[in-house]
Each structure stands twice: as structure tokens, then as C-alpha cells.
Length: 177
Image (cartoon, rainbow, N blue to C red):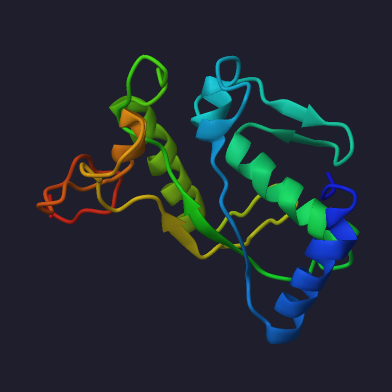
């Protein structure tokens, strides 16, 4: 995996050089929900049992799309000479509901994806190419945004309602709070 030719040297190399110099993390937003082949790879995206995908370049078998996205990013950074720059997750998540155009936006899928991401990050196991590594991670989103314009699915990414009541728990609540 590499950054797009043309953008690799003109955009990403200077950006990563800045992060290296300032010792700041490069933030990425891994969203398996938006994968173009989500229909064929839903279990892979949701951390559910699947046969995985073998990467012939790294010789690693990936059993979830999150690890694959993170390692692809790392590989592209490393190819430019910036494999030592920390990676942080600016946002990731899964919506709980949508309309007919977003059939995978369900409560069950949000609980699966978000719960597994949180467990994976907290475990510190890292990814196949970045073992024993933790990533500063921000979940999208803390709250549903019932007043947000646009498609229905855009309103339902939160773990909490605007009145602070939990929509579901993926291990973040203590005694239901």
C-alpha cells in the first residue's frame, strides 16, 4: 500500500515530516462502514468470524478491516520513510440506524464494530504490522445528532442520546451509567 502517486511526495511527505519533527501523531479516520465492498465483507468489517484476507505483500492474514486499514496506512507512511511517526485515530464508528440506502446501519452492527474496536484498542495487542501498540482513539460519535441535516444515517452514529441516556453499551458504562 502506498499513498497516491503525486500526493505522496507533494502532500503526505511534507505533512509526515512535520509530524516527525514535532513528535505529533498522524491522525487517520478508519471507517470500514464506508467500504465499497461492505456487502461481501460485512463480517470482516464487524470483527465477526470470517476466513480473513491474506496480504501477499506483508504475508499476514487479516481477520478484520480495521487492522487492515491501520496497517495499510502504516505501510504507506513507512514507504515514504516515516514509519516512526505515531498514528492516532481521529474518529471511527458505526451508525445504529438509517434508511433503505443504508441497510448495514443497525444497532447490532454498531455494537459489534464499536465494541470490538474499543476492546482491541484497550488490549494493546496492536495490529499484525504494529504489534503491542496502542492508538489514541476517538469514537464517532458520542451523541446522536437528531437535528443534523442530510440522510437519516448521518444522525445516528452516537452512543448516547442528546439527553445523555445511553443508546447501547460497548463496555464504557459503569453500572449502566
